[in-house]
Length: 617
Image (cartoon, rainbow, N blue to C red; front, top):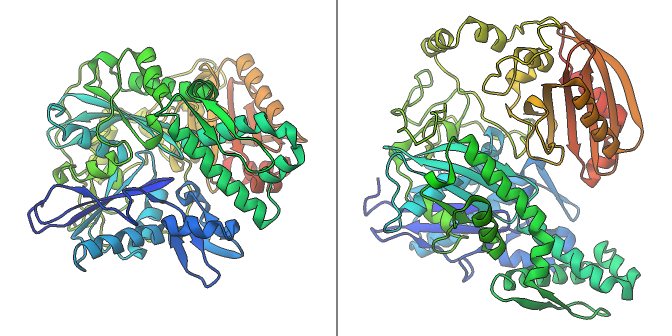
């Protein structure tokens, strides 16, 4: 495919910045500079005339009217629309404007020609709905039909392996620590004969460079706000255009100070009148972000364990994402895992560059995962491409992950519809549609019991049978938990464990599975089977942390009876449902935005439980 006549454009549309890389005319891949820079801000500004400006042009216009500006549209991919000034802008339009600007600049540098192939990177955990949004935006931007999707950790591993002396032989594995502006993602990627396999992955949707910026903003506020508390509150909650401009300028200065502290031991943050400039040291910044960075390092350690590998078995730990430049990151990883991580080239450009090196013959259905469709050029009824089994990694038990690589988009790729369910960051793996013959093999291998408990006809269990957890399936459900989950066990994005969000406990409460809440973006449903007293203590704590009024009632379904309690406060909303005669519990947890806090009451959450989560008879 990579002949001299093929022009390949790869784009890493990041939360804060977008990076594009072009290979053409047989030359090595190079970064496409947009507006004279390798990093184009992933920012949009809606003009009153109805056009969308992007990048640095958007940032300049933001100083005139910040209400029409969105600096991080990717972070709002689940929201379907953006309110920019008085205009409602579809998220797909905002993302398409960014991709269109990249395509225009690439075409200009190609003398008016278009790339033959476009590769778009995305977080490995993105489910089908989010990938549909990205694909719809690419189509809207005019990127054509030959578009491939590449998981970010796979691209990062390919970039790592492209350096002399860093090649990954089949059987070797690399940990990718990706700390971007909006999120943290971690993956263990193994090399196979055909490319790469994602052995394990996880992430934190609430940790990134933007959160570091916010911590530093709070710090400088503590230093100066006492001199004029009223003026500082106007900065935090601007009411006029002048106040919004001042706040925007301060945010840019805080971000610049953070970046300077990765190179220098101290720097000053210029402050608006009447406040004095604030001297900030690297030690102060590290003290502010150490707890958050510790969460990322602990998740890296847990993800590595879940892959069945130990740090000494890795070919390396690769740092990507601009925020991984913080010196504290490398120091904490080395302290925790005993391995000194490394970064090659610029961490901001590693993913876009790596997408150029991913082999097309490592095709697998997992990254595209278009339900009911297969690779371009194959008939819809044919089975998905099945690559050879991955090599054995020392200490690793082979999983059901097929190799991940760039995925061709089928001709009948479904367009994104706002009615689709938005998926949270921690979304798990979706089932692939498989043929009848493959289903028979699965049934024979897994046994009749698994078939019965996995089908739409949910098996029921007695109270005595549920006192002790049985064997959990690949989604984390025991038979008793599946009875409690009902249809969500099959229709929701579910994965073992209790996730890594604010509701995650410090220690395991028992066998558990966490699913995306159907039709409710950013909300999760968790099911747990464990000690009844421990579960009650934990769920009581969740309800207490939400605060506010409560709604309580009994419920029943799937042969179970129990009680639920719902609470909704300013920062979170929680509904806990328990089973009367067995140690089973579930809870719906929603971390509120301002809009959600205003719209969610204990009653509305209870209505949602009864309509969408409560198992039916």
